[in-house]
Amino acid sequence: MWGANQLRRASTRHFTALSVEPTDNEPQGKNVTLHERIRKGLESRILSGELKPGDRIPFEHELMEQFSCSRMTVNKAVTELVNRGLVTRRRRAGSFVAEPPSDSTMLDIPDIQADLQQRGKAYSYRLLKRHVRAPLKTRQVELDLARGGEILEVVSLHSSDGKPYAHECRLISLEAVPNSRTADFSVSPPGSWLLDHVPWSQAEHRISAIPADAEMTALLDVPDGSPCLLLERRTWHDQSPVTYVRQTFPGDRHSFVGAFSHTT
Amino acid sequence: MWGANQLRRASTRHFTALSVEPTDNEPQGKNVTLHERIRKGLESRILSGELKPGDRIPFEHELMEQFSCSRMTVNKAVTELVNRGLVTRRRRAGSFVAEPPSDSTMLDIPDIQADLQQRGKAYSYRLLKRHVRAPLKTRQVELDLARGGEILEVVSLHSSDGKPYAHECRLISLEAVPNSRTADFSVSPPGSWLLDHVPWSQAEHRISAIPADAEMTALLDVPDGSPCLLLERRTWHDQSPVTYVRQTFPGDRHSFVGAFSHTT
DNA sequence: GGCGGAGTTATGTATAGACATTATTCCATG
DNA sequence: CATGGAATAATGTCTATACATAACTCCGCC
Image (cartoon, rainbow over all chains, first blue to last red; front, side):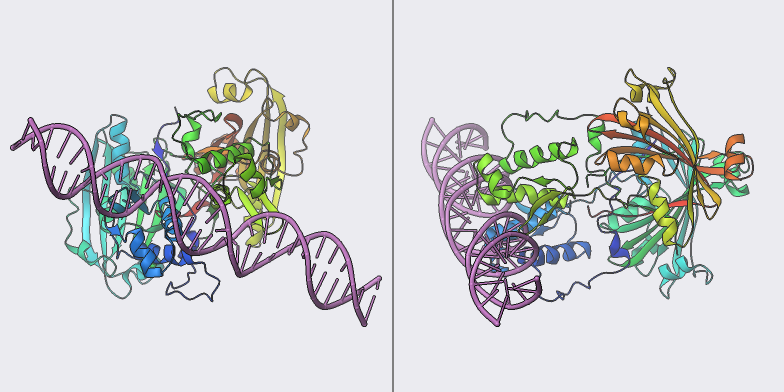
């Protein structure tokens, strides 16, 4: 009935991490509880990428020994990580780093693919441009990404049933993701590649409405000046910028839909 | 630097509640754990409005007795409610239903007020129209809201530093919120009134880009046909529709910004 | 070989008790 | 009357233990 994209997994529990953060090497005075220290220790190992999705985290009895505490305490820490979606547990087998949620349409384009297919549409993708270049000195976003090095620019077009669905211009930090230099983006979009290679990232989104310029008019097949939805997203991994993407959707054909609740 | 509105507290942990739900009168077989039953019991009393923000929930020793279980078990249940933001605790005093978060700009207009003031802008509000009417039979949204009765329509304009900021057309279910019939919306917007009177609601959002029509051109002071951001929101309380709102922002002046994270 | 059951292991839930912390009440003393 | 301090009552954390449950391993019997 309301249809269109889903805006899911949009949570801001940790959004402060984008500005300030406590450097993690167990500082903060003394009044940190034990289960919190255990949780934060595991959490930072997961978020930093040391423990990757699918990896087993230490058994509860190992953590008991390591922190010389009771099982209830480590259980509380791990249970909290399960609640936050970072960990899944399997009886007899152990506890494992969870796969990052893939239903975050708002977070990345490739889910448009799943979304479209769910609604019986054909998804297709076309690479328009791909090159490595220096950041523009006038664009702070590009300088942040480059961090002294170069950036990879990937421009592409996503289509639904053969009709243009979204235009995407993406910048990737070669500093943060060096092996993106040799990745193949001619078949699948960079978004899905990044999701596989850089899980557990934070993102900042900006949605606005803009008129179609000459380029969009041609690529998206819309009248000149017609309203388009512009979605900009900057993504970080472990405090360092990873990618910036600018996606343009024809405004009359698409919208972002999401369900929210006060209750978390 | 990125400025603009904040898209906060946007979480979808419970978004399935909008479609299916388990009616709550403790069904589901037998394999429901005790702390879950305790938590759900309190949760439904809070979400239904029986326990309002500021109310004290039973002491842990009372819950112990009521469910004849140990304190650790009720503690686990209440701790989970704290994690979800439904409850706050004060030593010696007890545990209380939390105030609903007010930083949810995306969820309601009145926070634009706070947002603007924070950035040194003057916020003003003007009521354009207000009347009670029957739902249009051709609009499913209005029929859902009315539930056999009438609906209240409130049209208003929000301004920043004297310049139009957003146009708002709101429908309120007189069935779900009967005392809105006599509420005064000439000074403060209906959004903030509703937040005070119907806390703990769920909402479904839709963001799209549309061209300004003649009415918006005049009210928002933008060129004819220029892109506008349209935010539609339907809100439920305890499974029943409360309000539908349609907010139009000049696209060149505003955007929605939010920070997200995979990690919850 | 394969099938089934016993044992093993790690998580899942719950208990009873201990001590700490915080904030309130209330009383005694100056 | 004010003020300091003890008693009190709630949550905050942690322990040691128990039993349940799921899933895997291994071994023996047909």
